[in-house]
Amino acid sequence: TKLHQRIVRFLVLLLQEFVSARGLGEVLFAPLPVRLWPGKFREPDIVFVRPERGEYAGQPEGADLVMEVVSPGEENRRRDLQTKRREYARAGIPEYWIVDPEGQRVTVLVLEGAGYREHGTFAPGDTATSATLAGLAVSVAELFASGS
Image 1 (cartoon, helix red, strand yellow):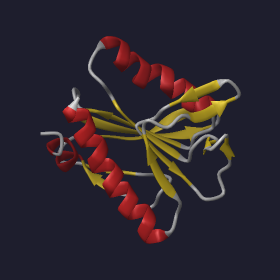
Image 2: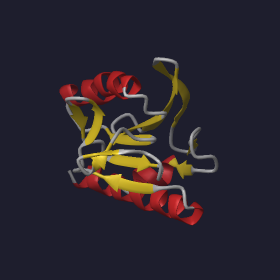
Image 3: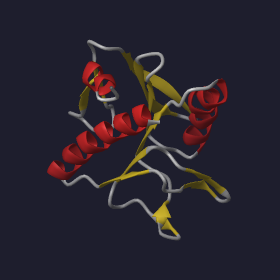
Image 4: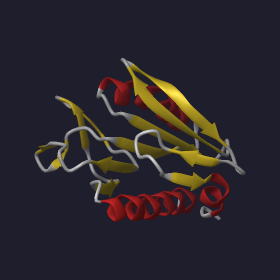
């Protein structure tokens, strides 16, 4: 949807500016398959990869941070909130952002052992922060307003 695309664009531009200014790596976006493990690929909405991260057939081998904007519908919600959470943890992705326009919240998850722990759940009026990229901060109100 246009809402989904606008939110993704807002995050890609913000993350790209942050990463480029610090020479941290590369910001990529869907459609781009990311290899989670042999035979398993996903296409996260937004992917951050450090320069030392490997590739598989020209695609990222895992990621250092992924962001998903939850699409409408129960199946999409279940996939982004549960299935991908398990898969990204299994793949060892250090940080997973779940951006939920319907719920008006951003959940930032950080890998701890074999699963994710919540770094924070942020609503309009809050500033979502990254645990992996120190200093990365996103105004949740501006983020969701960008979808209008």
